[in-house]
Image (cartoon, one colour):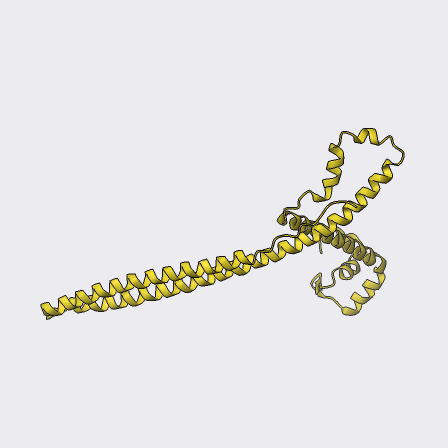
Length: 235
């Protein structure tokens, strides 16, 4: 801490070890645990204020995060603006200015807002739950599709790899100096047949993948649950 302005404070050493609980060395000297305890007792009021301030900031950050998550949930469920829907409706009502002159009108508005809040909260929660369920179902079917396609891709790659190995073997046979003509013709015929067989197998895999995809997508379509028709009518 030499040269640091805070070192001019006669209690800087105690303040540092009191506030920095994980500090090990100060001014190249090992911190004594007994000194730490003594320092924390000496600055306990100051430490409590710091603790309270950090707690307050943490709570504020948590509230901001919860609000952000809530707004994202509403957005995902296509419910953005629902919390201000009634206010916007009343604001756009041209008769409001006249009705405000009625002595009982504020009570009517309060009751309307209370009823709307209760019904909209129920509607929002049900809609969010169904949206989460829908997203989970979509994730399940997407994973099923991806697994099916990965399996078919692996099978296709394996077939191509086997064909390439066989092709290399046959080409080596064809490159031998003492190969007879009838042997060369047989090798070429075998290579041609293997190539046709590979094409047929790859086509079959592709058709199976399309059939499996159709079954998965049909299952997804049949399991779609309509969102509840939550009523916003007021009684």
